[in-house]
Image 1 (cartoon, rainbow, N blue to C red):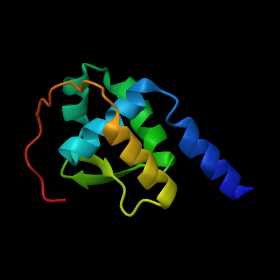
Image 2 (cartoon, rainbow, N blue to C red):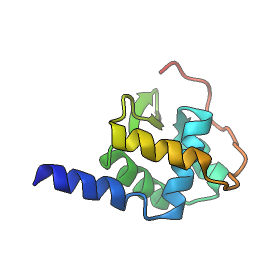
Image 3 (tube, rainbow, N blue to C red):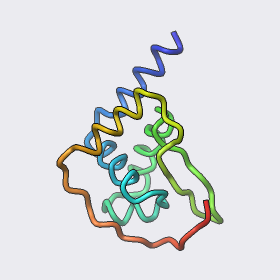
Length: 108
């Protein structure tokens, strides 16, 4: 049953335009701090954190701490299903917001 739950969680995470955009954005720009995502997407922190938590729990993202900041990046390695999902997301003709960086560069 665990495999079914994992599958449904990973598919369900994609049923939201904002989460798909976040995956495409993070995939394009690499590890990003929550503050960078917040200002780039013009989103309140609590709403953004909820989306990031769903994407992390569904196996698409990983988080890393650097000082007081938490950075999100695409999890590696991804299983075949999630790799194929990311390949499809990369081809989606959507306009991403411009990257607005607030954080300092961090060695992750």
